[in-house]
Amino acid sequence: MKSKANQTKSKRLLYFLLLEAAVLLLVLIFTPTLHTWNYLIQSNSRAIHQLERSFTTIFIPNTGQEVLPINVLQILSLLRTDNLASYQLSKQLGQDGTILQRITEAAWPIRTDRKSPNVFCLLEEIKNYPDCDLIDQREAVALVYCH
Image (cartoon, rainbow, N blue to C red; front, side, top):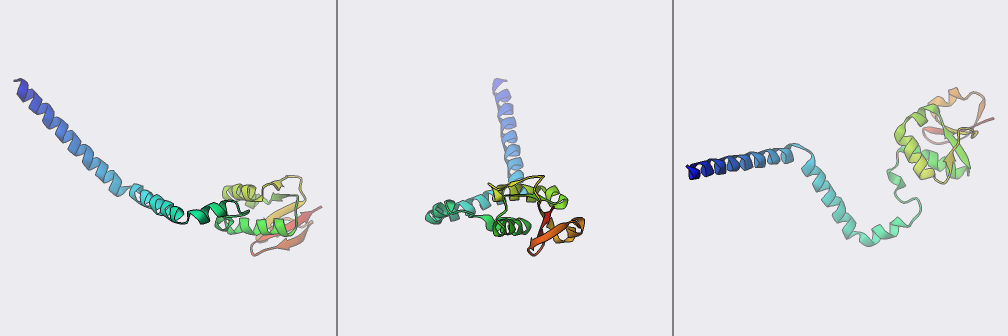
């Protein structure tokens, strides 16, 4: 009787393990997990093969900014060209969380200031600043000075 009970438990355990293995296999196949692991392995292997270059670029100012959104790159260009001490973003630019975060990071130590007369806006927003003077512009972004 005992051996029959042990056989039943062994069969249940075997079925459970098979079911668990099947579910795990399905999860790995039908989720982006494998793709993510593959991407991580590829990106890390590139970094390892280019280790010397990776370490030297870490210490170069403004490294990695080429991946920033185009509007952020244009604002950075205007910030540096016009040597601004402070700035503020237009309502439309400020409502875009990605642009707000990236410009805050990339422009540091220059900070946003709600009282700053220097306002960055999209070219289509210039009409919202009729009392301000256009100082400079790039492809899609303008710098206006509001008195």
